[in-house]
Every structure is written in structure tokens, then in C-alpha cells.
Image (tube, rainbow, N blue to C red; front, side, top):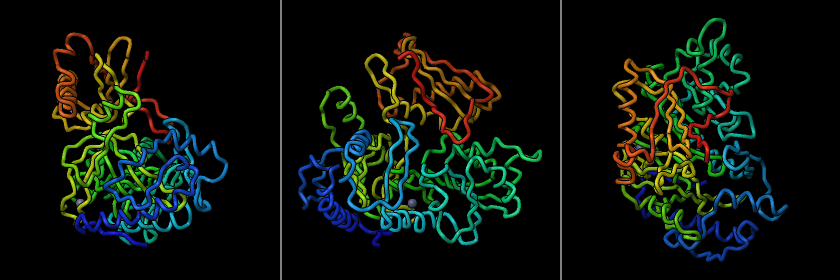
Length: 444
Ligand SMILES: [Zn+2]
């Protein structure tokens, strides 16, 4: 199993990615997934633009259309996505995929987070959903307490005995745990020794500061991944964005926002993507990934996630040079105002800011398309709710202007093309283990 440690110069990384790409292209022509592709086996990453994008919906369609002939090796294990967008998708891995990629991700990268002395409470979703599943979530040498939402009480009793030093899991599940009371004590009382939290899969959002205060720690790390692509990016000790996981040769591209805009306006337009290693700080767009699973390589898979490049290919305090990104949100979550597009991702990003008049604990955004009213429901802690709402509103304007200058002027909004409403709520309804939808569109 070959991997790079990230300190190598760009030429070394690209040579490695080139050779992985060529191997994968040679194999892929035997898969019905790519029956309509014209393969040039000698293609280098610089020429990747000629390969079509692969969308999640196309994968789904091909998967269910063919009974055989999609996968290149016998599957060993099937993962399933939670199906929040467009229904659940099944993705297999071979033994080699699990050993090479999953093994690498967990031992080498998650090994940066956990020492041998660590006792880790691993909060996870039941299989087959979720790559943080019990058997595959953590380096093999840590002591691990696995817990699904329905056994949280038992896990807390064990936690009282084993005294975990770290928590690993998806933010929405971790939040579910904190709502729990047991024997008259809060979950937090069982977890006093925890000094480190590693978040999985989805952004921790506005809760990062809350966790820092709660556990009196700065040792909070976010990681970003999906069932389809494995670990995509991870936060290092410099805490300045997440490094793209190029260690095993995965290739990342970004479709800049102006290209996404052209695609939306003109049917059939194929947007141009740029290799992330060659773009500068501040580039915002949809992340596209090419991964080399033995069972089936995925070429130019569109993640539907909008990301912002925080640092391009450059040195970092941790020694890894891979670009650092921030995940803003879903590309398909957007509102249209006067012919302009506003991505919910920008709004999410605004709400994650530091505010001086209060803290947002949780929120929902509801866009009423007919009335043109965008309502922010905030679960917040603030001494002056009115002043806080006006600070949040200013931040929303400022953020929209940062990501798309001139798209939405204050005058435009004040003319009533888009009204913003702020409401404070005590609690949002929750279903244990289910990730809540933070952006909703009404009266579409
Ligand atoms: Zn770093």
C-alpha cells in the first residue's frame, strides 16, 4: 500500500496521481458504469477535463439498471448512504479497498488524533449507514466504546467506569447525547475527562464554540467524508481548515461558482473544473473527486458540496502541503431572488461566525418563496435579542457580499424583494439520530 505523507513537492504528488489514474482507466473500461465513455488509458490528470462528470443520480440509475457488470471485483461489504438527498445509495468495498483506503484513513490520519492511551467514545449510526461504524471507525490501537443512539444510556454507564478522554462522532448524534439525562445527571457529568473531540462527516457548524467551552478544550477537529468517497478532508493541529486527503492519490477539482451559474442558466452547458492544487485561496465552488476504489473507480464524482479553499497547495505547520478547505454547504440548497441565486451555504457560513451580542446554539432557515420571506429561527443565548438579530442580519449581508459581490444589495432587500425575519425558539423538534434539515423551502 503506497501513500504520501503530504510533505512532497507538487510534481511528486501529481506523478503519483497520474499513475493511479492510468491504472484505474485501464480497469474501468470493463465496467458497465462507464460503457459510454471513450477511454484514453494514457490520460494524465492535466487532461481530465475530457472525462465526463459523474453525478450521484447517474450512479443510482446505472446501479439499478444493470444486475451485473458494474463492479470490477467481488464486493466484500456494502455501505449505504442515509438517503437524505435523492434516496439511499449502496456502495460496496472490496477487502483491498477496506484495507488500503479505510485502513490508511483510520490508522494514519485518525492516528494523528488519538494516542494509544486514549479511551474513545465512538458515537455512531447503525450499520450499514455511516463510515464511522463501529468496526471501522478508529485506529486499531485505541480503546473504543462504540455507541448507537439506542444504547447511549448503557454507554454512559460504561463511560463512568472507563472515563473516556475523547469523543468521536457525527455532530448531530453527539448533540443527541447531550440531551440525555441519566440517574438525575446530565450526560456531560459522565464525560468530564473528555479533552478532545473529533467530528465526523458533517460540519460542526455553530456548535464548535459551545463544545470548546463545555469541555474547556481547543482540541476539536473536524473531518469531512462520505460513503462514496471515504475520507475527503481532515483538520490538522494548525486548526486552519481541512487538508484534502490526497495521500492515496485521490484527485480533487473544484467547479467555480461562475461556472455553476452558467450551468444553471444554460441547459447542456458543461462547467469547467480546476484542479484544486492549482487554485488560490478564496476560490469557492463545488468539489469534484476522483477516487480509486478497486471495486469501481469513481471519475470526477460531483459531491454537490460547496467548499471554499482556505489555503492552496502550500506548507502548513503540520508538514502537509495539501490544500485546506472549508465546507460551506450543499450546492442544491439555494434561494432565488429577482433572478439571482443565493446559496444556503453562504447563509450557513454567516451563522457560524463569531458574534459579539450572543451565541447561536442551533438554527433553521425557512424560505417562503411565494411571500419572499426568509425566516431565521434561532435557538440562541443573548442578553439583547433585538441587537443580536440585527448583528446576525448584518453578518448575513456581509457574507453574501463576500461570496458573490453585488448579488444582493441592501437597497434591493429593503425594496421588499426579500424580507428577513428573526424568531427565537427554545427548542427544535428532534428525532434521535436523524440529522435535522436546517434549510427549508416553503410554497415553492
Ligand atoms: Zn496542516
